[in-house]
Image: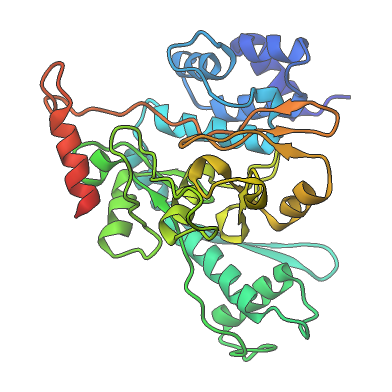
Length: 362
């Protein structure tokens, strides 16, 4: 007998989400993909839900989703893209919704089986990401040949040690590493000209005010990369150097966001830069010949017949499987620039070019 949740999802698909239902019936998406659409349209009015569907399922929409088709993404990756678009296009601004949600911050405790329990914090995303990344950095610093615990186990132990103030195993044995939180902020939003959401690495869209606060307080993870103001492309290095400078590493992190292998969600901190065409075979050290891979898929690339496709200045590579199946790049659904009224004269972009160049060289 179907569970009530399944009945609710089926009702939503058959009454308010025709495009998602058509894709499900045609075998273009799976049931978990369809459930993600239902979840991310819950609470939206009919027009907003239709706009979300149109973006992801109509290739002729004014600004259709780019990169891999919904069914080519694992459900968790598709859900993340849905949520990102929903947050940016919700009828109520992210600033207002965030302000309301901050009032609901709380800590929850839930006993579990086998003498275990869950403790969770509902809090602003920038602080949550900083806590997660700090625990990860501390755990990585404690790893070594004589450490039997996994990274996950060490992370839990360190978080408990910091909260409880207990000595704990190996307390103080590793360095207190800096936790990086990368924030990508639209330049006009950073200047306060618009409230266009920023993007927090390993989370997604955040309010512009939160991003401005992170930058103004000197968040060490906010990097400025000198790029061509016309298309956002960094300078190529060619074959003058095999090693990547820090600016190019940072651009690669911003372009790819995660491991580029299909379905992998491993984010930037633990990934490795890889030459798509090997250096010894004439590959250059430039953004169009680089991809970001987690250690597991980096090894897989070199040991199997999986191969990356070409990349571009603003697009990560896709992949080709040993059987020849092509997987499109899981590109970010970047939004068109949000122009504040009266910023630019009609037919002229020179003030914007001056603004961006002044900012980049500052």
